[in-house]
Length: 202
Image (tube, rainbow, N blue to C red; front, side, top):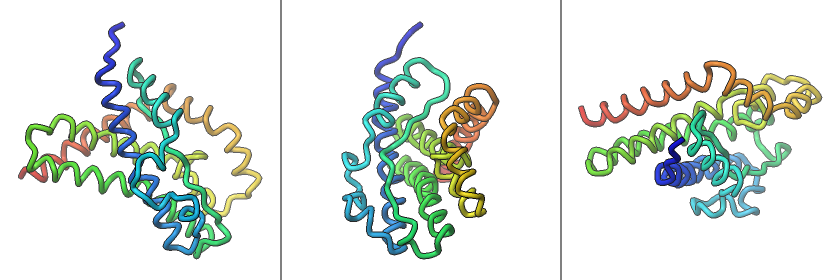
């Protein structure tokens, strides 16, 4: 098996950069909705060092990129206090959705940059692809992913949410590696990135 360390390191760097606006968006929206927890913990910032999870942002993406399969990882989670959020469960959902939304916006920004930096198109395209994949991945309604907040907004019993959370990682692994979901998200992200770059070059 040929291990492409250069590509893997590039993927990790791109992923780290993409988790920064993702986690910042969570922190920013929570702060705007009245929860000062992220601000007190220094998370309302675009400094990448404040959002890195050394296992989820560096190690896991490096291994998944090196050995193929589904590329995934995570940033350092932004802590929130739901009791301080305006809107209750709906406010919590807004905070959660801010992350994936930021990745879609960032993918569009990368495509826009590609209009003026033709020499970096390959890197920018891969970053946009990973950004869109990150958005889709986080919309899966399984804890601890952002999409799981749809369950809270739907007012499922807290005990049920906690029980699902216990097996969240296992459920994700089964979905990503034993079904066609991972492949579909990868293909959808590629097509989405292609359309963005095509649109900005039209």
